[in-house]
Image 1 (tube, one colour):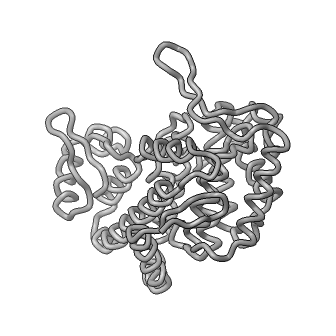
Image 2 (cartoon, rainbow, N blue to C red):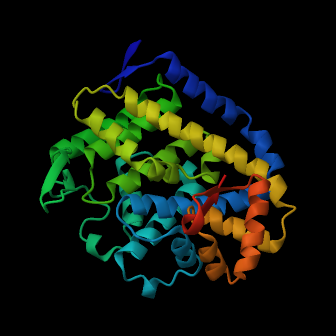
Length: 346
């Protein structure tokens, strides 16, 4: 059944209805889960924050691993944030923290979005001239080709009045259209924002932050304990393919594929959250050394036993003894053989 939502076409089929129902069923049980899992959730939120910051900045080109992000965020020294990757990480962290703590008070208005953009690029020296303001130059999405040339993948909204009009229409639609399901509105707002590309830089990062903001505003509070950004990073090729496929039809495009992707990503991280909560019961019986190894693997997917031993200062034979135990308890998975053997969270 084809529907018109904002300026888009959307085919609401049984698969889409199933995905929405699945997400909302989980959400309905969240209050009781939250009361029961208080302490575990604090740990999960810390882990999710590091993964979100690391993933979203890496999608845009940062080279910092989750471990490096964690170290940076533990001891933020403004005077030492001189490289671009660190500036982007700290800016993303502060914006995410503001959203987490004050989402109810952040208005979904043009000024509200400009304020978040200003915080996002707060430490970025190269972005001082435009942060918090709409773009002044064209910012088409381009790809670097092997021969050194650049190819335009998607033409964003033109500078000036077209961008201003598009952003005004977007926030007005979000405020006034009460018919679509809240999840549909969240997904479409993030899509339209990144399609307009209203700011000179930081649009991709801010679109993912806005998805979290709108989910929180609509009562989906479990989003704080998982990393939507990490899910996007792990499906980066699909993410861009779906976005571009829809954007190529603009205006009045069919966004069904984007909505389905967005909901499927949310469903995946819900399942991951439940697995983590179930594993926390097992983790309470682990020794401090076992917990530290498990945490390291969680933040460094694909790590090898030698990496774990070196970074944590644990003798290699001990690490090799603990890893099979964690596999046996269904907490981690082993990939590869011989020197290529690596480990990730189950």
